[in-house]
Image 1 (cartoon, one colour):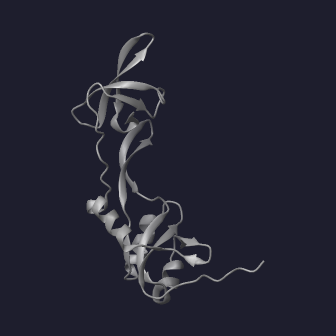
Image 2 (spheres, rainbow, N blue to C red):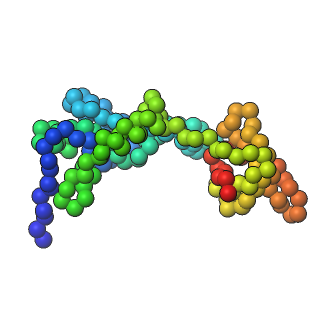
Image 3 (cartoon, rainbow, N blue to C red):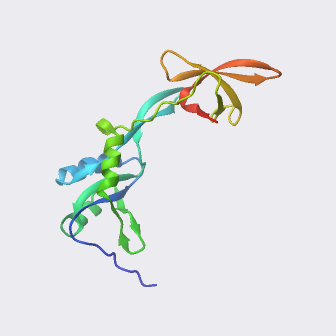
Length: 174
């Protein structure tokens, strides 16, 4: 079986680099030390730590970072940095990422953290529960609680409406 060599093009472009599991931050630091421009957007996510859920910062694209470099000049140094698996490729071509996509990501992620639109529901709207023991059931949105990370919904159980308090990210408007 003959392996095709990668097609690379000279010039400063953005590339998606695949990283080893949970090594995005290490790769970002190493590539920055090589004087390369790196972009690693984050998102606030709820994770279970022990028996409780906590808000943590997680990579928006787990296993990937974006790096702006000239493949001819810096490609090998980036590719063989610790924590890097490889560049994202399509067949024998290293895939470059459009400057417009990086700019759009930067606009959606002020300070490097993705801003998720709050759920736009009004009292009385029908919502679907997406997590937990009531996953897949529909309920009536009642209101957001003070901290706005939790909501109250009315779920019909055994012929009557029962009030449930849920994390806001576990519901979606129907």
